[in-house]
Amino acid sequence: MQAPSAPLRIVLAKIGLDGHDRGVKVVARGLRDAGFHVIYAGLWQTPEAVVRTIADEDADWLGLSLLSGAHMTLIPRVMQLLRDAGLGHVGVLVGGIVPEADIPRLQEMGVARVFGPGTPIQGIVEFLRERSEAAHA
Amino acid sequence: MLEPLLDRFRKHDRNALARLLSMAARGEIGSEALAQIPAAAKPARVVAITGSGGVGKSTLIGKLIEHLRALKEKVAVLACDPQSPLSGGALLGDRFRMPSRPDDDGVFIRSLATPGGQGAVAEHLDLMIRLLEAFGFGVVLIETVGAGQGDTAVRPLADVVVLLLQPETGDDLQWEKAGLLEVADIVVIHKADLPGADAAEAQVKASLALSHGPAVPVLRVSSKSGDAVAALWEATRTLPLRRPRFNPEARGLLDLLRDAVASRFCKLEQSANGPFQEIVREWRGGSLTPEQAADKLLQLISPERSEHGDVEADR
Image 1 (cartoon, rainbow over the protein chains, first blue to last red):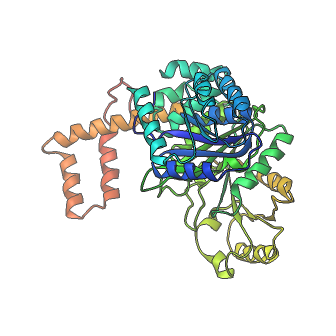
Image 2 (image 1 turned 45 degrees about the horizontal axis):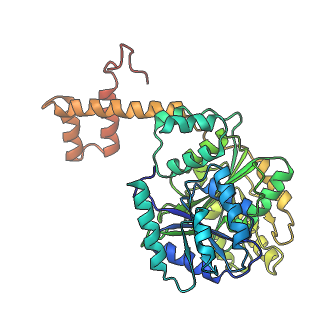
Image 3 (image 1 turned 180 degrees about the vertical axis):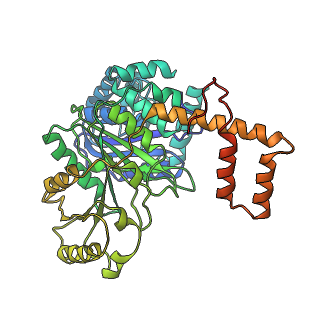
């Protein structure tokens, strides 16, 4: 759909009651420096607000950061709302504190990848580029 | 690919609007597609909010959105933030400061990366404005990149330019310089809850009093307290719509006209002798300025009969 030269647009958001935004800001900065267009939606977003942002911004990716432990409640809701809004094509990444056991369950819901603490930015960048090239091949 | 998208747009599909805006931003919408976008029922009021980085443009737009929604106005925002000249990346952090209710279809916010050297606004903004007004947004707010003294490119795109200043930004000579202050239709002393706002207001008013043209209102506004946000909209609403109306059919004609002129120019260029070469010689020799030469060439080209039919070329 999109010209390969156009920078990928990714929305970064924190959903629910979780005030820890240092990590997501570091990721935002890292992706910016890697040539992405990062739309920073910030703290205390509802799943509904995040999906509206994705829709209006015509984003290619959504990155959700959660350190609150509410991921198994909030992420299924985001995935459902994305599908309802006709945005099933948008790739979803999750970052933050997620127990190992939950990762396969999130991936079953359609999450492309979960990145935990200590992930180098370059790992996220390479994953996004590979996936996007595959989608446009 | 474009046809189904335009169809969905005409049926008021918001995702289609979002996708068309992306295509417009990348310069992928040509004049044929443009002609198929329905005309707006009513022209939108396009208001540019400009000023230096950190002066409070996004925050004030957030306040304006609340006020406009209370007045039942549908409002769209095109928020520009800078793109890195090194990596091409961008961190678009304006909508973060603009709270909106996700179930409110009367608000649309799009963040735009803006390459350097564009005068503080993204490319193809006129087209994006046209899409938003065709979709039924009565007010379009343009947030410029944090603008310096010379970033005046937003003026022809907007009906009203609102310039934000803040207390403690310089002495009174600052306001005598040419540039941004001259293109403002309304000046806002933002963060008016801070000390020094009245001094800044007095300096700006003194400077504006020396300029010709219509009087420019200077308002003290505080987004923190909400003071004068309503007064700002009242001042904005009552100014005339200045922006030239965007006419997609005429745009298409302009493209045809360019093609016709170019093809006749090439035909004349190929002839070894004749008035064309004479004009070129005179221009090279310096007896004609480039503008005079272009004028003569236009006269040479226009009497020819149209290639598209037998209609005499009109002026």
